[in-house]
Image 1 (tube, rainbow, N blue to C red):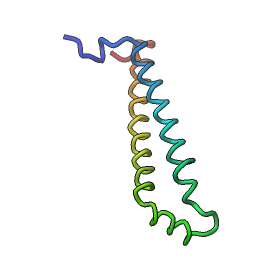
Image 2 (cartoon, one colour):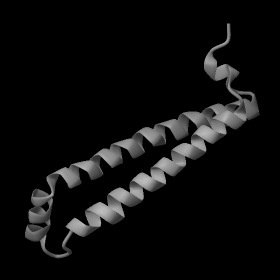
Image 3 (tube, rainbow, N blue to C red):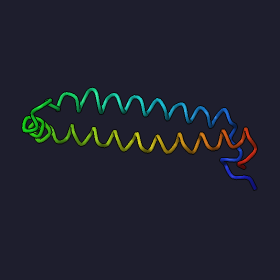
Length: 92
């Protein structure tokens, strides 16, 4: 009996990897450029700490987006391994 992954086509796996890349890009842009960049005061660590303390939930949301990016990175790594391994014949 084949596993579900073995039955998936390379195209489906590539689509999953592509969607994961989009998640990485969107989450990264939101976390870094929209949220954290508005909190960081260059050359003024006290103001940066005050901004983070004043918007703890927003800062935590940016950290959650970083964790989502890490999860999507793992999906891309597995999907790439499955696609490349199938094309070279080295993986099941």
